[in-house]
Image (cartoon, rainbow over all chains, first blue to last red; front, side, top):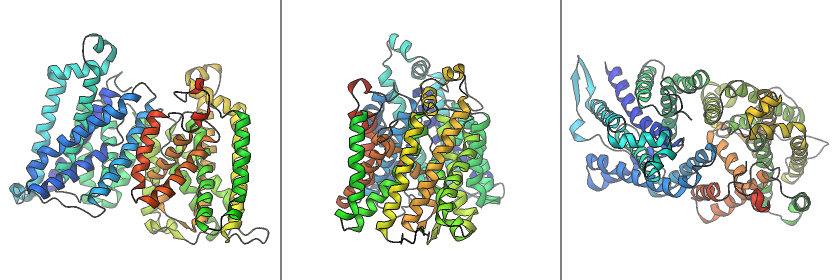
Length: 285
Length: 317
């Protein structure tokens, strides 16, 4: 039972992260290498806010906003000038961001591990189906489900979501129709960055906060996004569930092989269906 | 996209003269070490640019080829008892062979997916080297005591002598690459980068050519990795880590991709900046990242692009 809960909580965490990555790719055609670094930054900022205020919930509310603002600045200052260039340049730019963000974190918080305590509300395990379940894990599942539902409503049903989708499928036409394409792009990048940070904040009480935390996560994200199909939110949900459960089972039964299995999964998917299981034609540019 | 040939030759001659003179002018071991590093990473970057600059494929897996060379040299000398030169050739072969395996898988996809796949494959190699293959690689601790050559009765454990050996290997590598780039093979790679579909229609075997380029590039990476291990007397899985692939990418782009000397220039600037910045602040890597971001936006064809006339400016492609 606890394996399932851990698997589900891991899945929703992965989904939060992958959703941001897949949004940015689907809408802007940019693979954001720095997504893992933004996730890390979210966790560190949450740590700092907890240090100052003592409240995890303030961190949960503020850290993603701060990182979203940073994302907007990154998009405006650096990505905007290179949209019309080869994909490689955008990859390179976001790679440069990793170096800068990691250095900034090292400068501000140093090299040692940081820890965010589990919020009081969820510090006690609860009994469920005859086993003790950490309640914070349950919180992640519910929170992740709510966020993904909201995201789905915004992108697929709302008017603003329609504008975003129109911009992604034909930016010239959208421009002609009077949509401020440049502003939409900034918004999407900020949203994606904010989601990465949200993932970092939610993960903060579970994992040691350290410099390397972004990298292992970004690989999992790539796996999810690629299995699900770049740009597809639905696919990301499915793939996050798949990978989350696989990892939880892996940690229980074959801990040493988890990383190898993850990478193999990524490699096999890239080889067999690089466009993913749920990709819509034309979106995975 | 080349530095005009007369100017290029002049710079080349000056640089070679400078390199030969370094140990005579400067008595300090640091500057010798710095130039040695530039030669080794230069060789790596020159090989990397064959597929990145010429064929237009962004590999994020070159660290694995670099590391493969280092481990191959070490194991061939310590476990198999080979001499340095056969082991160095073995390192080049190991790089090419590993590149062959990678290319079978990675060349099935293109563009971004190629980059991600090479990254994933190399990272898999990194994990294997640091965990499952501990018996051969020494795990995360790495292997100390990587040997240096014993040739013509010279003492290569003397940094100066080893440095001259590095110059010879570097110049041979550079000359071979110059020939390759000017050959029909090099031109075919350019054609593939410009328009792969059209190149295929004309009758080029695009995949075969890409694979060849990847393997040659792998051989360069392997030799460079072996030399680095030998210079430092040490090898660890850190050499295979994805940040190593990132470093060679930064160097190549900084100097100017798609040119013969651009990547070497990039390596020199990178190493000098690192040397200088690390004296001023321990946060040099972040500053380097900033410089890299600015270069990507403002100087897409790198420092070498500054020398190329106006008509070549803009996108290096």
